[in-house]
Length: 347
Image (cartoon, one colour):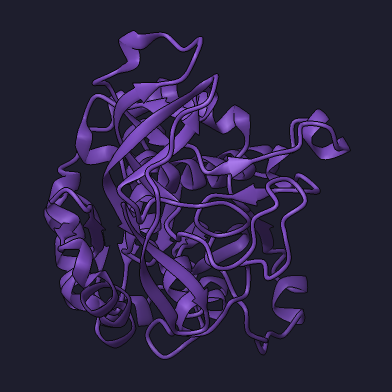
């Protein structure tokens, strides 16, 4: 079967491997929707930062492996002891693989598992493939196939919001920096589930226009420059990309009100120049948020059907054999032409 495999910095290769067979408590998933995340792109262009070169302690797998942590598809076959009524159903794949034995796992902080593996990023194969075997416990049933590649980003957003609620009052005016996939998913949950006043900003005009077309309130470059102190909570879903001439975290400090909170979702693998006194004199708090927990899965399962947005309008599908050129390199050269890239061998 066809796969795309990540070998290291700017080294992606199409590799044919045998089609897997599901073992007991597993299903064989035909991958119909695999999304290209910015984290995966950063691993290819600038990394690897996360991917492991040595065998992973839980899975034994090391580079090269199949990337993509945001994917799902149709159950084609089941292993011994698995209910065969699952065949023909659609599900997203929960990418986190945990030991369930360390102190963090036992205390409900399983996103901080001491031996965490993550399909497509760390120690386990991901979704840029024809088929994958998955434990039934790692399936997230989805009725709307459009959401198959969005469950993982929605879980990341769900966790960020849960972290905010645990440390601050989730109310008032909220600003989301970055109108990419994570930013859209975060804004969607904040606006439609928590009924908050949410504004999205992004320096890319086309991305911002797509967000506006989905029903989000957006902010132009000129308005962002004049938005100091306009939100009591700011979600940084942009990462290290410059936003309006500033690092997003620096801009988030500007936008955040005194006493407010800045929630960090975007990943930084660079050193930032920040003045600690900006936090001291204003009592602004940074709340870091990483991946998702098992509790977040249960929360999203309750909420996902209440999200009524045209997510399909932000998706650009490309052929699987063009994922390197029209996916990874396009994401490096010009991200404004897309918001979300999705592919499948079966397109």
